[in-house]
Image 1 (cartoon, rainbow, N blue to C red):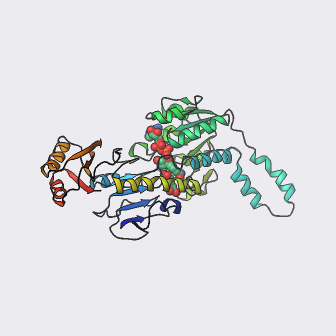
Image 2 (image 1 turned 120 degrees about the vertical axis):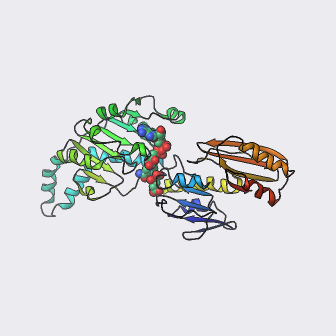
Image 3 (image 1 turned 180 degrees about the vertical axis):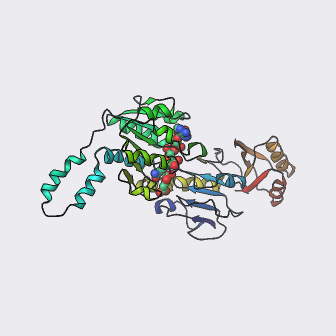
Length: 385
Ligand SMILES: NC(=O)c1ccc[n+]([C@@H]2O[C@H](COP(=O)([O-])OP(=O)(O)OC[C@H]3O[C@@H](n4cnc5c(N)ncnc54)[C@H](O)[C@@H]3O)[C@@H](O)[C@H]2O)c1
Ligand SMILES: O=C(O)CC[C@@H](O)C(=O)O
């Protein structure tokens, strides 16, 4: 049985992709072969020697200790783009919540006594007059799966859209509407945007990207939307301009403390990816990837390992993780050849310090070949599939 530990609720439609005759799935178990996770923090968990893969049913992987996983030869997968539409819809609705003062107006109506309600409504509405989106500028930091979808939707609504992403992929660039303008610095984006929306991963280099100096660049009445992660916006600095009224609203999916109660903060409970469709999409995508890795050694959409996929040939496949240093392929093929086994196909890929080799063999090999391979210095893991 292949053992799968789930650290969060994972969509049942996704879990159905794992046949129960071969897979045991539980929220608590020892020595799992793979872990499925959404937002649970994994930094302090012990990594058992049997662990081969982690599947993140979502996009962000800041809850997973990637270096630790790579050192142990554990492949971490995510589900790029699978929840992008869900986040896009919430960001577009949040711009409307902010521009039409909907949360504040709703609170106002809730607070009214029932006697004389009609008069109070008509008298109070002048305090919630809003503005419309067409002609306003939306600045998007990060034009990946989510950023591109928001850019195109906002452009279709008549907004002027500018975007900053120094590492935009060719795939994203192809999808981006021609009307979206690329800006060459994040400072220029802040200077020009009525709405700023972040769609970047939380990394060392993106912490406090919106800091005191950049907040000062924003036009009066700008709205900041953070559906990326807490930590990307310096909220202490932002509070000062929210207090002064220079910034109109801060809409965040990551409320961190009592700042959530500020009049100009619209705080949501990390809801961006919480739709039935997105949860199904993420689970199906990541589980298919984890299963293909466990059963065939193929790697698609890993954040710490190279892409490596090869149709199966021969009787047995070896999947070998090792350091990305010279002569590893030579040592692997020599060790296999010394046992008399014949290689019918082979693939070697690398990403950073990690390399991965798939070898298809004409016949099944003896356990001694595994042991010999495991003795090779700088080989991290060897699996026979
Ligand atoms: N609120 C939610 O529920 C929710 C849901 C999904 C994703 N997210 C967050 O959104 C992030 C983005 O998701 P995605 O699916 O679009 O990821 P993605 O990998 O497709 O896109 C991220 C983009 O950010 C760009 N980028 C990285 N650093 C940058 C920087 N300093 N300046 C400008 N651009 C930069 C990258 O080049 C990439 O194009 C995730 O990492 C996650 O933290 C939140
Ligand atoms: O799993 C979730 O609910 C949140 C996912 C989201 O933060 C992501 O990074 O994909």
